[in-house]
Amino acid sequence: MKYVKFDKLILLINGLIPAAMMWWDVRHNVFANTVEYVLHTTGLMAVIFLVLTLTVTPLRKLTGWNYLSHFRRMLGLYAFFYGLAHFCTYFWKDKDLSLQLVFDDVIQRPFILLGMTALLCMVPLAVTSTNAMIKWLGAAKWKKLHQLVYISAGAAAWHYYQFPKADRTKPMIVIAILATLFLYRIVEHYRAEWRKKQKAAAIPFATKV
Image 1: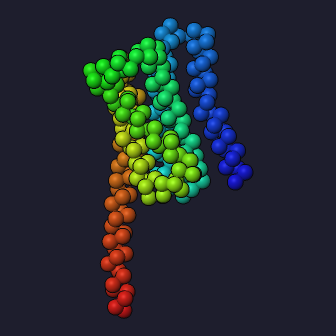
Image 2: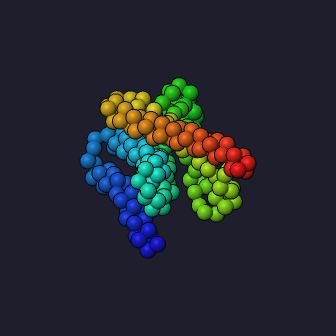
Image 3: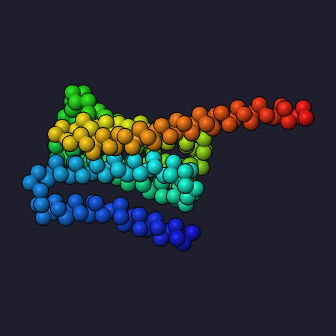
């Protein structure tokens, strides 16, 4: 357990490095368009951490490294942290803290709607990330609720792809990775259902014998 705590500390520090570097760049006016730079960086980090969160389970099952499950929660919280920072920058610097302007943007620009969808889906995931909430909801309901991560990740990736003036190469890589992860989960779901049916069919036969 002591190694888990140490590795979580390492992940905590590394997850904050992009934010620290961004803060330094902004403070020293490294980029001409600071708002655009912060929007791009926070949005990209949110997408990256969403992808990393969804990678944990397939990687754990394929490699047998169950140790990785200890870091899924922190990766998810970092995705929410950067996603929230992305929205706050947009709301404060781009829309002057006007809810009406944000609402108009959501209606008129589909890629903004996708970004809002991604963030709103992450809110209940972040709120229910504690052990106390898992116990309160129950494991089954908690797992069902946390399937929102698929909607959030898909919406975030498409939001990234549709971002104006964005290079389409990186968004397409993200979409390809997510498509692979989603396909893996679909295959695993049907494999699990098939095993259940095989097991159920074998029980009557075993009883007769």
